[in-house]
Each structure stands twice: as structure tokens, then as C-alpha cells.
Amino acid sequence: MKINLTSVMVDDQAKALAFYTDVLGFIKKHDMPAGEHRWLTVVSPEGPADIELLLEPMGFPPSKVYQKALFEAGIPATVFAVDDCQKEYERLTQLGVAFRQKPTPMGPVMFASFDDTCGNFIGISSFIAPA
Image (cartoon, rainbow, N blue to C red; front, side, top):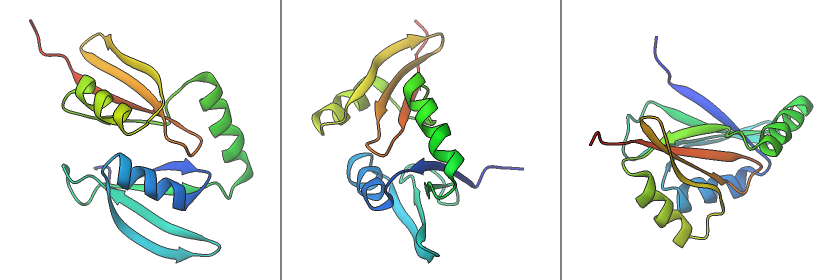
């Protein structure tokens, strides 16, 4: 068993696509009509092309409640691995990304979280090299 698709709920698919590609650096993989919304996925240029992130429209009313509760509690909708959390924080800050939490050591990882402009906090983390 392996992960091949996961999703993050977004309040605007077009805005999400722009943020996740132009700012975060993901690559659009699928963009197909799906009723009133789109089947819209992105992949990492640094990872396997068969692991996709679905930019999921919030068509199911309880998803809005869930997304809002996570956001208000400051809980990331998902966490992405990066090679160096501090460097990625600096890169994204220069692009105007609003961070909720600056890079902070948390056990064996450095962790930060930011607003994805689509209703979510997203985390980034990297392992801390042992001293």
C-alpha cells in the first residue's frame, strides 16, 4: 500500500492553483472538468510524479466547517517536507507568504506554518542534522 493521492480543501481552485504552482513551486498535473468544479492536481518537481495533491473544492458543506475549525485552531491542513525549513521560510517570505509560525525546532525537525491564501495553514518541516 502506498499514497498516490491526497487532498487539501481550497475555497478557490484558480487561486489555489496559482499559489501552489507560482509560489510553492508544484507542477500542475491534471486539470479536468468535474461538474461545476475541476479535478485539479499538482505534483512536486522533486518527488515521484505519481504522488498527487488534489486541490479539492469545498462543495460539501461540512468541509467548510472543518477547514475553518482547523484554521482558527492554527492546525495545518497538511505538512510538506523541505530540505531546509529556514531557507524555504526565507524564500517564501520574500514572495509575500504570510507565516503563522516561523521556523521552530520541534524534536528532530524544524517546523514552520503559513497561510495558503485558500483557507488553510500549511506546514513545512525538515530534519535537523544531529550535532
